[in-house]
Amino acid sequence: MSSSSTRRHLAPALSAIIVALCACLLFASTPARAMEIVKCTGRPNSEDDPTAIMGNTQSRITFEATVDEGENISQLVLHIPDGTSFNTDDLALTLLTGDDLMTRNEVDYTETVDGQDLVLDFNTPLSQAGHLNIIVYDVYFPTEGGDMQVEASYSTADGAVDNASIEGIPVISVQGISATEALSQWLEEQDWVKAWNSNRFLRLFADPTIFVTSFPVVLTGFFMSIAIVAVAFPLAIPLGLVLALMRLSKFRLWRGIATTYVNIVRGTPLFLQIYIAFFGLPLAGINIPNFPLGVVVMMLNSGAYMCEIFRAGILSISKGQTEAARSLGMNRLQTTLYVILPQMFRLVIPNLTSEFITLYKDTSLLAAVGIMELVMYARTIVASTGSITPYIVAALFYLVITLPLSKVTRHLEERTRAGRKRKRKGVPAASATTKEA
Image (cartoon, rainbow, N blue to C red):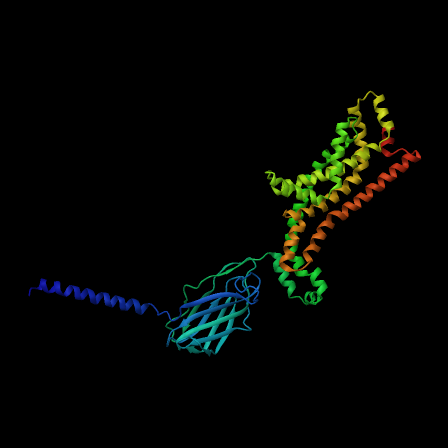
């Protein structure tokens, strides 16, 4: 056999030997993975909702990884996600063995906490095949929540594996909570709150924890109520003024239309008017979004009451004012615009303020048709908590507006009465004195 033929026969064998040697070197340089992740889960300590993990809520982490036979695991390091607080007072560590992994073996270990690292040094290296199960209690994930990643690494007693990472650990999804929910949870742990809520009446009507959580929700309804009034009230003023002038008109038709409208609106409940608008119009094929329809109903109702306020204010102006204006050459329109109405508005400001308060409170009736205002938001929370506290919160939002305005109304009424007394005594008002000067 020639040398060239021999080389051709030996080449495949030499190639196989070289590949085998490279494989041996590769496996020798790569340490065996003695630990692999089985599961890493989070659960709340509360059993109210065993599936939802909330931020800043007492929870627990369950970590489980495999241990191979004879690997002699000497140390395991768990890195708890940053921003997460935990303690090891009730740390549970068990080696599950047997074919069905039902045999629980206590493990002798020493724990050390270094920042977010939980270091577990095993007094006797783990050499028996099984699953190492670790439960860390009293875990509080960050308030904002998110995907929490637990990291783990291990070392062996013989030094063959040093601080090797365990790959494929699943993330723990945590739902974030608001600052008010975090405050509510903190309040639940306070002794004075527990003592307060031990009284059934106080817990039902003024639970501090529900008060805190319902405040921002009801605040949204407060803004909705303010928005309705802020649009409806200015629109009701010109409507009421036109109706008042129609009722004072010499034309019987105008008087009849205005009188009929005012009597119908003032003579029927606002609640009924809301129902007719929200349920009757759709039946007639007229579909209007809830917010503008609510504004229109409140405007039409308030306009009828403002009509009587303006009419009474106009009638309270002395006829001598009209006669004096006409003697100066003013026509009827000029007299109304420049003499009667300015004096009338000054007189009816207290009554208009009272009407604003009434209109603001009446927005609560819109809850019956699904508009998310103060009472509707409060009722939603009451339905889920069984506590009346959200209604108390809603009442406070009403008082925030009505009490200061009521004080303003009283002050304006006192000024109006004082001005009338000065006129009866013949003392000129400050404005009149200024004009004479």
